[in-house]
Image (cartoon, rainbow, N blue to C red; front, side, top):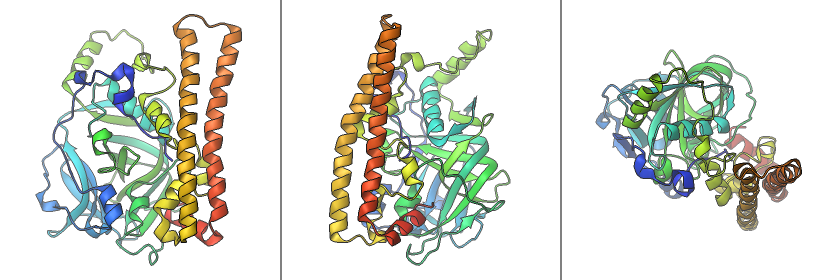
Length: 422
């Protein structure tokens, strides 16, 4: 459901990946997909065996899904599921991780966030800036965000059975209901098959995100299947932390990306041309279709949700994809599961075809300007065609949420919303 994410290999303008730098010193243990399929939440690496060298950053979950892990400049901190506030503490000797991903970064590129951004907008911003800094988006890397956030929803897994665990809504500073204007949770929603979680909501807060971008290589391994971002939050005082589900980033915050030799060269070149104006769309001119990022093209072809169904998802209308993920918790009958699987298969097929229509319509519009053949008449026709294609795709995603609701009971819908943290 989130606007989801970038894959270099199909973008013609980025096909020469040999020019891009792979971030070194990245390590990972465990596997999201395997954990979900097998239910195995045993430890895959002892925290005492992880590097604590300065400049090391990472995120993960404790064995048994009994808490979250974050690493801040080499310092490992855990937030345990039994703590009511998500308070962090130092790990104990026998702590181990069922999931872990992180890496060492010697130097960061600091980039100001130019405007308030929703989660999906910010994820696109990360990809765009990483591409501009010559980071290979097919490979995993760590990144950070410091500053101010709104609509922040985060959780700590408890290690308890979901049927026995009640999600707690609140935060260390303010306990309130957040405006749910973004999409999915990460290992929380997926891990709910093995664990409950405490949910915390902050309408306005400051602090830091430590994130892992999976790339194509580790999607579904260090991130939720179908997503490439795995993010944890920690407050400015390093007192509370957990896995981020939804957020918006405020203007003036700072995105920190690993500095590569290529980006260092770019910075030197830029300093020699400091008279140049700020170019918020720098790098966009290399896109195959200017209005679509490489990630959006990939997701459109794959039939991904891309946050198009948020009005349904966040207003109590479950979708077929996550309903299937939570089939055990929802106690779906055999017929229900069969019918929802049929909805999902139909939705996926339809969305892929409509996604191709969106790509083609945007290409036609782009070509009018690229070929200098645009005029008032064909501009109107092309923009209407692009808008209609987008509308058809969105209507399709929303319609399948309506169909899903018809199959579920009111109790199952209430359980779905609780497990999804809404």
